Image 1 (cartoon, rainbow, N blue to C red):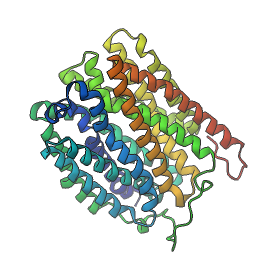
Image 2: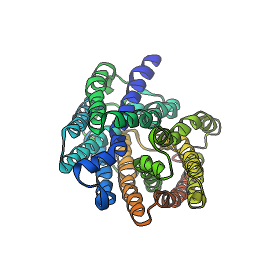
Image 3: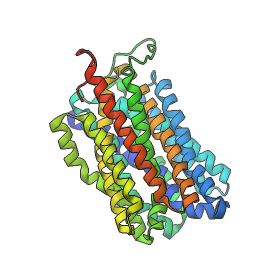
Image 4: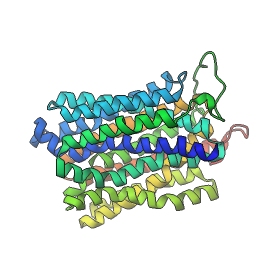
Length: 409
């Protein structure tokens, strides 16, 4: 059972999230040609491309919260199968389209379906893995799938786009989901009723309260997650164009876009070892926002494209390797089991969806006003520092709670 759950549950969800992130980021690679073919190149580009890139996150924000609440009474397996089917089909439809309206609708569908999908991963982790395995399980399911997709994805997607065009890119990414991932999930994922750590079924879902979510300190987690969502999506949505603007083109652009995410993977093992050895999850997650935030503030002083890329790479590597695995373990350790799906949906919806939407427009509009993507990246650094401070405040509040409820960061 132990080996099969890591391969069948953890491995399958990791591969699925890998493909999900290809579907999210294909437009970031293809946006110059899509803009030309759909008529929003030129002066309209900053505004319309911001909408095109972020409308996914608008649907994602709403559906994460909705999905967490609405699917509490459903087994997560059919939910993830149907979600993957719907958004993969929408991605394929984009490849056939010549309409900006169709593009926006399909990207909104992508966001809604992936937003419902995301909380189910925490439900699988909580039901199938022991409390002492949660950080590793989150790293396998969410972290590696996400960052391998971003590291390898830009290197793979960029040459496909340049060789075959943006339509083939959407056919390929959507088709992988329909042909490979949906059958994989049907075959390998198992119902929650068979899980060793599943909560007993309840006739009625109990009322969700703030106490079930961890009390008022939960709001500080949400705020910190909003700032990290801005950091992550503000850079990820725009990085192909940002690195081109500082001198990287062709295959160099692909590798420069991928480098921050390779750094995240490289930093993961030592940072995970530090987290496991010290048990200081909150402190490490806080530092993973504070240090990158400071580094990004130095982008304006960096003279060369290589120096700017180095600052972005180290910032994203430190942030991504330390924040994501720890924050989900903190959530799953402090929220009541019955509220895990809802809490995950709220946090990811407001954080990744809401924060990412704001950041997508922030970077796009600042680029339009200043002519530089680095202005937006620097602003994200300042917001990241505020998020790190809020997470430190969360840790202090949890330490002051009664011994029966306190979580030691």
